[in-house]
Amino acid sequence: MKTQTVAAIYDRRRRSQTAATEPAVKLLQEGEVVALPTETVYGLAADALKPEAVLKIFEAKERPHFDPLIVHLPDLGWFERVADVPTQEKQLVMELIGRFWPGPFTLVTAKRGVVPEIVTAGLQTVAVRISAHPVFSEVIQAFGGPLAAPSANRFGKISPTEAHHVLDELDGRIPMILDGGSTLHGVESTVVSVTGGKIRILRPGPVTREQLSDFAQVEIAPATEKISAPGQLPSHYAPTTPLKLRADLESPGRDGKNQRIGLLAWSDCKIEKSYAMVRNLSERGDLHEAALNLFRYLRELDQANLDLIIAQTVPETCLGVAINDRLRRAQSR
Ligand code: TXA
Ligand code: MG
Image (tube, rainbow, N blue to C red; front, top):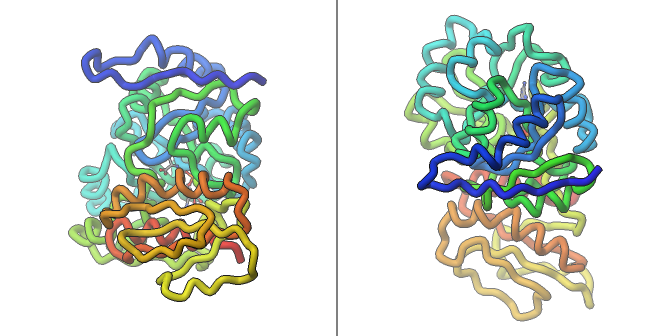
């Protein structure tokens, strides 16, 4: 299969991309998969209500069938068509989606029968979100129904934040990539569930614990905990090169001489000269900038023929929680 990359950089003056997005919509209607930009990372989309189409996502990504997908909706009107929110949780759920949709926020809630089993890996819950990306939004509205879309990388690998990352991962496996430029946030959406009036963060992301605390008590599910979905695997987002996390770089703890070691640094840390390659997530210590650079730098370090990547943790606040979460999962064990 030949993978075609189509430029769909959003033109603010025209406020429309119809000519560029049309072929993507057509492919989706024919039950094909298409990689699309979202505000978080690129997604690999297919008709969420067509099991044969969703199967192609699992095949292209080599994703195990026990890992459920996020269902993206064209608009709020679709929410209760796919979700069956328990009455006692409804008020909080409506407040949350009212505040954070469209945006980098995914809600896990009870599903309706229309959502095929393959999408939810047989679970009785479904993960839903509405993307704010203009290109994604235009495609899904023209398509007119829910799109299942996991990140457009091969299973367990680093999520793509640019169209050429998708090509690196899935060239020859999918018919089309819509190129909408770099994504806005750089890390995947925050995934939450709501039970007993509390918010549980299943995957930290751009919508932070601090923001969610305005609505209810918040708890973070530990990465290793076996939750309702096996998708929260502790090892994920992994480069091929071994990666070790360090809280500080004062004692780099080099394991082995004559090794080419790369460094993923943070802020104005003191960096030894001996590193073969250095990338700084944000020299000025800005967590938003760090999130944007995270997957791109991990990819660059991974492609540099290093023996080891040392990554420095970032402060465990706001977006830093999501960044550290991805780094911990990228760490080789
Ligand atoms: O930002 C994002 O969320 C991107 C863009 C493309 O929307 N998508 C994304 O999808 O990151 P994916 O499949 O790479 O990650 C979805 C996560 C997985 O960890 C999956 O296990 C979890 O959401 N998930 C999906 N359905 C679930 C469910 N019913 N219960 C609990 N977790 C679920
Ligand atoms: Mg993913």
